Image 1 (tube, rainbow, N blue to C red):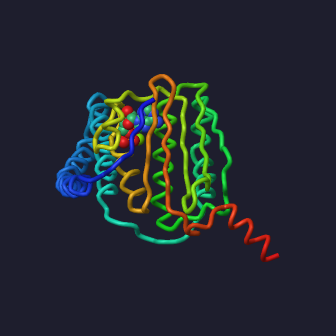
Image 2 (image 1 turned 30 degrees about the vertical axis):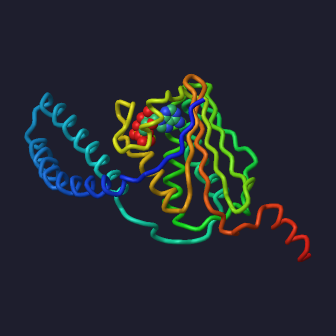
Image 3 (image 1 turned 180 degrees about the horizontal axis):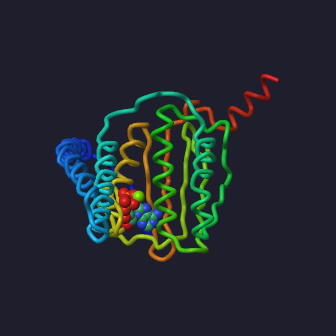
Length: 243
Ligand code: ADP
Ligand code: MG
């Protein structure tokens, strides 16, 4: 079993560079897109096919650039206290139809809904969850299982686990997963996990990845609890005391 604790030391510099490149590329692309639309007006059926391909590919480049810009945006925007467990349940609903289509089951284990409070930007954490769920689902074939838990087993922490029964990763892959542009997918951007890591770190959290080829992968994310060192047991006791 391979295990790795992630650090994004050079990510902000790479992020800044990516952002400036993304800005530079966007302008000429807008021009290209405009001229493709113009050409479409007088195109024959055959030419139209090619123009549509060009159009789609420009859209794909646009999408990658947007991801690069999101990645390089600094800091946490709106800070609130929210329940990670509730957010997880919401995001499972979002990916559920796709899982159903792909023949993948989703299991929620010991999800602590109310007391799994963390402080930060819930929109960013939503994106983190979607990226982790999406990667897990993309690593699996029909019959696979995506298993997610949120627990308070460590005092002062809210722990999230995302496990899949997918193809897993070897040592070499595992070393690179958080590097911008590392992807093994033909249509991948390699920007999902850098975004995930950056946002977890901005929320004072850490992430560990465990993987075994042919068995599956688990991401364990640990956030500081908004309740400080009050554990679930503590809060349960407090509630009893205040009755
Ligand atoms: P992308 O999904 O666009 O390829 P990511 O940054 O999200 O980019 O992931 C980078 C790479 O890490 C993936 O291409 C894949 O090789 C690997 N990876 C990430 N999550 C998993 C997973 N759950 N199982 C197996 N491989 C994974
Ligand atoms: Mg991804």
